Length: 298
Picture 1 (tube, rainbow, N blue to C red):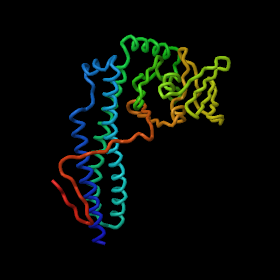
Picture 2: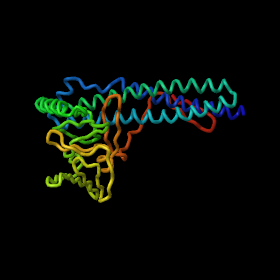
Picture 3: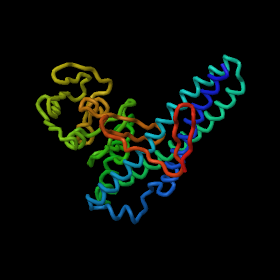
Picture 4: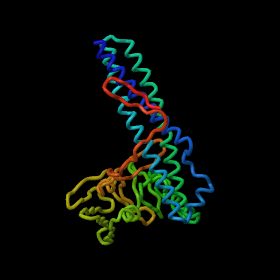
């Protein structure tokens, strides 16, 4: 039993040291550039698509690295929590105490990475907003005020709160939240992903086509058809300020993309499930595990 417990301690020590080394590197890198776009930086990307894309790609890559590391630590924390419960059941309180200390440290590191991800998302949002001219933002403000005045059950989202990875999307009507569902102008988002959008006025119908996918929906109808197969949506497409808005999550997922809603910042990330995540690199001490031995290489 003692040999098994020793093996567990060694395994956890390795995981803990590795996670600490990686997290320290990621946090240190993040602290060098928290991703907050200064007023000068924003001016540099206004009207310059090339500079905007370089900045956006850089911020997205940095956020992906942080998110990848957070996911690794989440898995390690889950494993340690199971080992902690097993140690308590076995009556080995000393082992349980060691594991609990590592869990506390992992939780703190995970929270730090979450905060850094939030900072990166804020920077990406500032970068998105910089693609709009002052005149465009003023028009969007007028449209937002009109929507809120005429639709007391609809909340308006800032246009920069729709974060689409690797793609430039611009709205002339802001996204909204209705009955807990996000609705977006169908034309802007669909065309950004290379989809064809057709409006059949006589039938109040929208047809979205991309490759071998065809989505057909009718305004104010809960029925939606994907390649002829009927599905139900709880919040139907509708018209706001003369623009057709559709349920974002359903449409985007049918186009093969992922959707993540962040409740705390009220923003939405859209990306491809096949997007590669850059590898996490570390500097300083490296840890090599051979059998039961732990070697620290300077």
